Image (cartoon, rainbow, N blue to C red; front, side):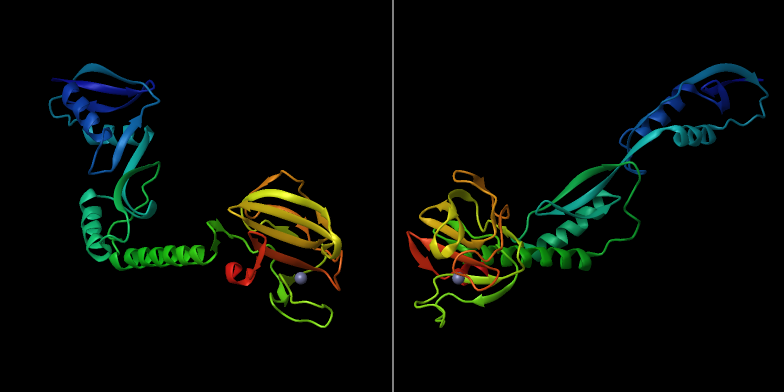
Length: 288
Ligand SMILES: [Zn+2]
């Protein structure tokens, strides 16, 4: 006969082990920062008890069976290593080594163009599949990201007037009259941009600012003016409805009014102006 430990989980016998201390070590190593199995930690919502028993010498203990039962019942939190480019997750890897290898290659390819880092990420189910390391795919994604960022910066630069970023096209529609156009119905050159749209179409603030006028004004009909600071203002004319009052703070993209045909207008459209220190500028340049 030999002494063994009988292991019980929630009162149910699950198997026998040889050494209590060795088994405790195995449990610790399995469930604490286990790089091999990507286990970060585990919660055991059950009680493990052991009883010493004398058993036939030929009896083989069942450490691995007991361990796998504990594993099945434990609430495990896993970890993986993810590569981030400019703060955006690209791909997860099971091992730090794999992630490092890819990161080194990406660093060579993109030198100072992108911020690359490896971060440990935690999850309830492992996500990275083995052998899914695809450098070409990741570098392609990063290149797209870089190109997008450059294009955004260019657009922003082009759409900025006196430090005010004209971020939003106020109404999506077809242009019915451009800035500078001469039309028979007018006795002067057109000072804004006319965007044709259905009656009641929502009009968005083109940039952040404060409403400085909200009411009717001659040929403009219902007019809303936003002051963006630095001498920049935007005008929204012929509206059917005005949603903002003088003093209201607006953010680019906020709904400020509805398309109408009030004032000197032959059909529903938005008359949009940008003014710099009171002078008219061509809105097309900044909007599109
Ligand atoms: Zn107009």
